[in-house]
Image 1 (tube, each protein chain N blue to C red):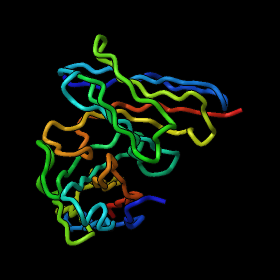
Image 2 (cartoon, one colour; image 1 turned 180 degrees about the vertical axis):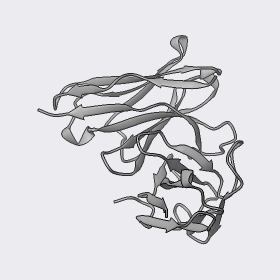
Image 3 (cartoon, chains in turn blue, red; image 1 turned 45 degrees about the vertical axis):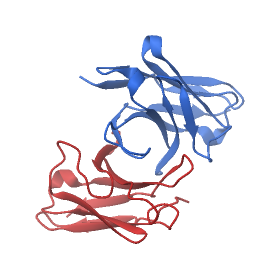
Image 4 (cartoon, rainbow over the protein chains, first blue to last red; image 1 turned 135 degrees about the vertical axis):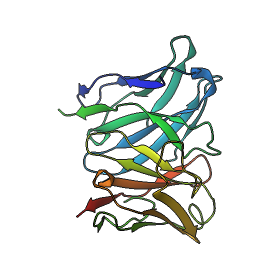
Amino acid sequence: EVQLVQSGAEVKKPGQSLKISCKVSGYSFATYWIGWVRQMPGKGLGWMGIIYPGDSDTRYSPSFQGQVTISADKSINTAYLQWDSLKASDAAMYYCARLAPYSTYWDAFDIWGQGTVVTVSS
Amino acid sequence: QSALTQPPSASGSPGQSVTISCTGTNSDVGGYNYVSWYQQHPGKAPKLMIYEVNKRPSGVPDRFSGSKSGSTASLTVSGLQAEDEADYYCSSYAGSNNVVFGGGTKLTVL
């Protein structure tokens, strides 16, 4: 079964760093793009960026460029999303998702993780 | 403010059809045939329902269909069922390594 399992909820203070994970099973991790999507409380979705684990080719949305870092470790089939210095406005649910094999560009995610809630509060 | 504009709500009775619109610009919806639609039930991750404007992934009922005219894409749900009640989001490739989403539409089955 294809699964994306994300790390658990996090509670952090502004200024702290954070790295959340997305562990993949059931398919060849290196050969499918993995993206990250933000959902702020009670709000819509925001496309953050995407990585190809095979060669770590990474693309960022202009809105998130420089704000977060997306990475992947092929040896353990895991993708990551990290912040060096969290802000209160980073509080949200974060989803990882696999780009569908039939997707030509970056918009069609066919398999999603369960989400990681990030709380940022002093 | 979301890049793509969706109505905040839509509704219909069981068995009826409902259409949700998604309006963008020539830089996104109007410029590419890469519009997707997602269904999200409360507390759940989104689910891909339509990609490339009008294609359905395997397992998605054919009651769900997509179309596009100019810079407006649409999702039509025919033969509404209770389980269709959810939030629906459109997305579009917007060039330059960017994808934009709509603000979401809450579909209520009356």
